[in-house]
Amino acid sequence: MSGKRMCFEDFFPGQQLELGSRTLSEQEIIAFAKDFDPQPFHVDHEAAKDSIFGGVVASGWHTCSTIMRIVVDSVIGNSTSLGSPGVDKIRWMLPVRPGDTLSVRYVTTQVKASASRPDRGVVWSTWEARNQNGELVCTIEGMGMYGRRPVDAGDS
Image 1 (tube, rainbow, N blue to C red):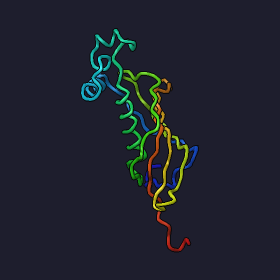
Image 2 (image 1 turned 30 degrees about the vertical axis):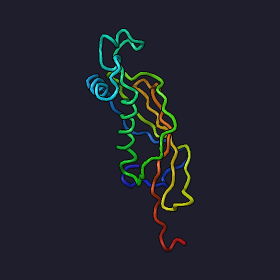
Image 3 (image 1 turned 60 degrees about the horizontal axis):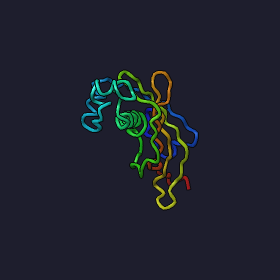
Image 4 (image 1 turned 60 degrees about the vertical axis):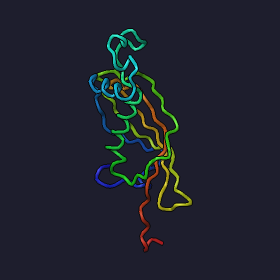
């Protein structure tokens, strides 16, 4: 939906938006993990080889942050977003390895205009990340608040 600013009215249940993709390098996987999730299988080659993963893998939080960046670049950054009351569920299905390219799909599951605040509404969505092989690696389910389009005075 490039070009125009997305408002609450632009979302509808069943909507699927194919967003961008990003490839994660080993260097950025290790750098992120050193700062935010320094478990051995994220930061140490030798320890990672002996782990259940058999090598360095991205932190799940790095995967979520990458997904968030893609969603902001493709949807939220050019919208009337008012923030989010929260995330309901995150699932990490497969590890993300150095060189993996994550592609994100935004699926709108529910929308509801606010009864108490007519200038906004809530959009429930699932964000799906797949690797370059089409395998689902992570899903994030949550909600966002978006501003509504103003009603023209002549529309009453």
